[in-house]
Length: 196
Image (tube, rainbow, N blue to C red; front, side, top):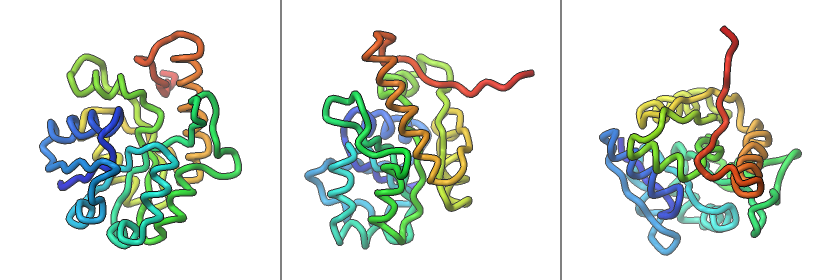
């Protein structure tokens, strides 16, 4: 599969490595690159930027046109500049806000509850498979992202419609509070446990 990752940072780089290890053809574009050109031939696009730059990028007409009909994984969280609160939530989400900017795109929220350190450990084979919550309105798109998550060696947890990003994004903020605010570190994650 041809994958374009928008963002070279903490999330984009390990997602690119995981994708390459799974045998995918990967193009990574930073904020200064030509995103529209990189998106054109992609089967899957991963948005791995901070929320405000992501909004600005998706507001670009060329990028919006290039994304028409594409599958976009939204990794963003609407974090405040100090990372200790959310700027959007409860009545909407970053996922829904971004989807509204690209109405012809199938947007699926995934990987936003995973610390970058866990992705890096996953890429190096250090940790057990990490759970990734997957939410989107298009059932086929959600299924494709579930398959991609499993393909890169992680555990996909089907999480319903994109509106559930309103709950996944606060989960990510809780991870930040636990990891950085309370000193548990950035190598932790939430797991879904089922009774036997």
